[in-house]
Image (cartoon, rainbow, N blue to C red; front, top):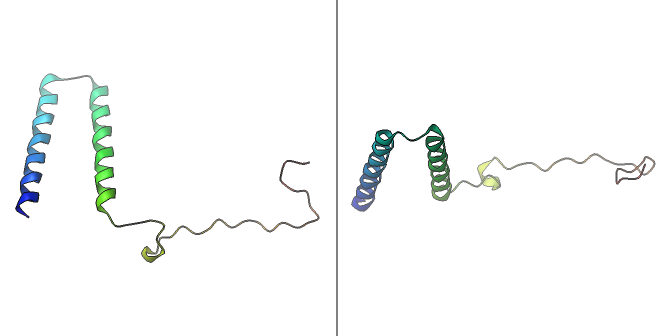
Length: 83
């Protein structure tokens, strides 16, 4: 528990230091956008790896239902490319 807390504090200090450095050197706005998108992607990856949620697992009640296919009759034109 103490190691998780200390690693969290170290990560927070590194983040605060990097943010203050970015504010001090004032890079162009696209650099902020690029770094922000990297940070959000990293946050998403970390959250997905630590989560046990699987959207396709029916135990969660959010299983994606199968796509209903229309019933085809033999007397109409087929939709395989022939006209």
